[in-house]
Picture 1 (tube, rainbow, N blue to C red):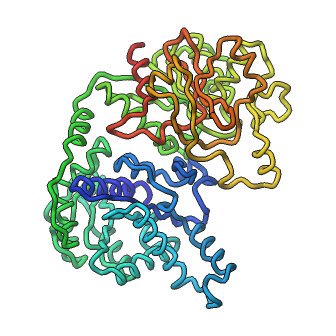
Picture 2 (cartoon, rainbow, N blue to C red):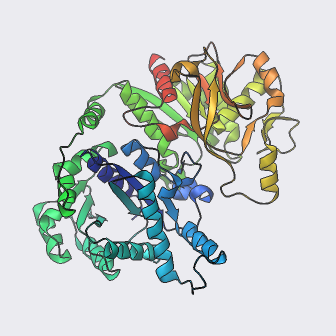
Picture 3 (cartoon, helix red, strand yellow):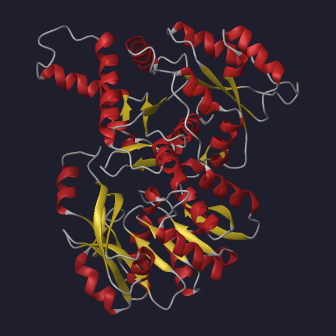
Length: 529
């Protein structure tokens, strides 16, 4: 089921295999008819992650990149929509030579072809593949069929791992295996027998439960791996190795084990477990609410980037969700509560909801010297706030919100206007990695330690260069520019502990053992505050 930890399990399996000296790449298969994740609602699907090549994909791709410390290509993400689109395109181009093109076998064969291309491109020894959704759903049956066919094609090279949930009903107090038994039976009906089961639960699986699953699911007891709840996802690879999962995988694939080296990872996890002194960060956004619950997945990469940087400085990150709409009203008491935070982040987003509140928060951080980090939309709104309250441009706005504003500090580029005029939304933003030339002496240059950097983007609207001179004249520093199109990428304020806005998404490139330079500088300033 969603949220049970399939993505983290896939990333962790990749990590422990990588630690044995093998090269690893990873694929995410989403069962949605969407061609990519770019048009999905973040409160329903979670964060949209962006690859270097510009592919908008599922947040699990971010977990793979963080755990494996690699940049994954577009070939490593597929959806039902993208597979059907590809097959239909081939059919229209007569690439099937006039054959009747059928759902089976041509859709599963396209999936297998994508998998083999991904392995070849990465020159990898191993590829971990996560099939999204739940066993038994109509949505992913074709991907299970592809998996079955791949096993038939390469019987000695393919293993199946089932991630399953074992509930402990509070009124009963006993771990129940029946849902797992039914999951395996359902998987069997698709022609697949799991080689390994990862049993997710709030507590470790005991011997009795493992015995019961083994007998009823036609497996050996040692093939049932316990995957209990833990404090941090970064412990998962280490937990798997307690049950010698990498040895089990290599043995099943008849591969000679190599000595494991997870020393740096163990040190990182040890730091997480030991640090006590807090650094308190507030994230002001709007993608939090889903019914009566809070969905932190909307900003997953931002959260993890904060953690990476905080652990780097041996601090325990305390992250609070601050609803931007609560700051819409002119309430000084509400704003004063922001002083309890060591730093404030306004992350990316779209649309008008909560914009007024975010601008008030940014103004308060600027005036009261609270470390502020604006990501994408957070950078654009910082420019609007500065234009209004420092430069006297009282009507300053973004044309995303006010198309008729006489002072469009943030506006669409001409190419984007043409795309939207033709109702072309999917995959048409400024996406993926672009270069940025840093200004020597800026805070950004100090953080990166080099002049030319590359960062990932996901936006349509840009800083309007017609207003650059007036903002710079009043004290806004342009710390980074895209050298190809002269687009503003980074803004800063001097005489402030940390006030930085970036047009890109630095959170997509942060790694557990290599925190992103700007997040490091932000957390450093927050600690000093």
